[in-house]
Image: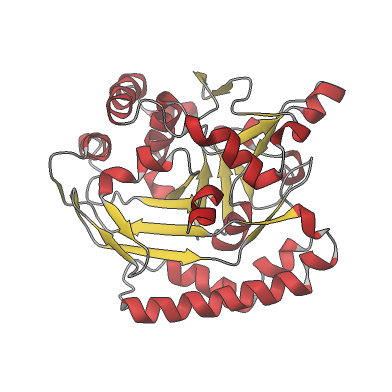
Length: 322
């Protein structure tokens, strides 16, 4: 069962267009949403306020603070949150803020038409108050949630603004060879990139009923199972062949389903990366953020099982430069 966590740092922005009209809560924008639908069996939200209204009743949308008890966070959660926040602030004090308006415009056109801001109105889950944008404390809270609920094997949804804070400590990614250069960490890893995924943009969120046809396609069901296989070992060439097959199937299914029901202007290409580490064994100096998370896992006797998986939507600004 593949699960992804939408944490307080995951949305790329919040639309206030509906809340201005009916005083509802702002709508989170999930960058790379089609990839979330296709790569994961369950989409978990730290709390319901992070879930777009169109997804609230989906059977595979789950809410962490409604499904689990607050005590599962552990008595040291607040202390570890502060320590991890300091580590992230030291490494990347203002993640991606400078590019945010241009990134949103490349995603939705003019972001002002949806009254989008880079933050919501604050969150509460498990009795904790957390800002819902991509500041260091939000990123730290999400990493800790992945660690605390390791038995659920969450992948963390990462947007282009938070990638530098979360993924960079592992080292650099060479897209041409599908290699992650692990300068700072010794672990088994895999990088998958899909290019044909298109997000659906609407005032109620990224879901359209026709997406179910894509989710239940046999190839994509098997692809999710393969991604979840901890023991799979393939060459870069074999992985590239799999990516090509899956990309072709996604393009075919989108043409047969969602493109028949929505206007082309509401579909935006957002390639995605999926990264999974094996069991973390050792870290070299320079990886303070992940090192601290691993230390926390060790203190909770989970270091032998703790893996890091990230779902990373690729910046459209970067795509335009390629």
